[in-house]
Length: 114
Image (cartoon, rainbow, N blue to C red; front, side, top):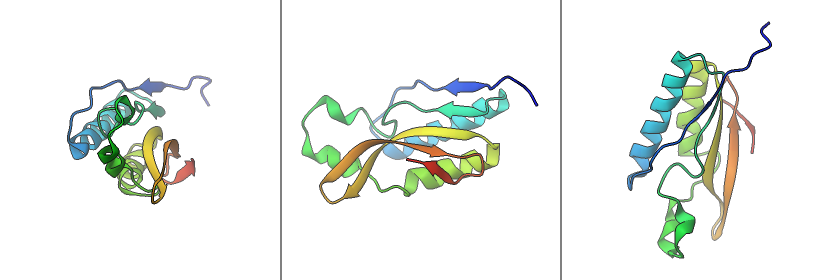
């Protein structure tokens, strides 16, 4: 067993379309895996332009449950690449209750922590 752990850190611009941002994040996972990364960290709240920059209540529509669409897609990428992914998501725990959460997806694609 190697004493080295290869970690990939992703920094990217987030556009207005949440689906495009998720797609580019999954592409970054695949690219990092090809480079030998075992752990990948995505940018804070990567699904949209940073929502905390203004007090716009419409931005709360961007929140999602965990598990949810992002964890399903990223979980599949984690399992496909046998990689741990740490992703910051705008989590909706209940109506009106949202958090800037970090989810850890294990190399089998399952949620290992929140």
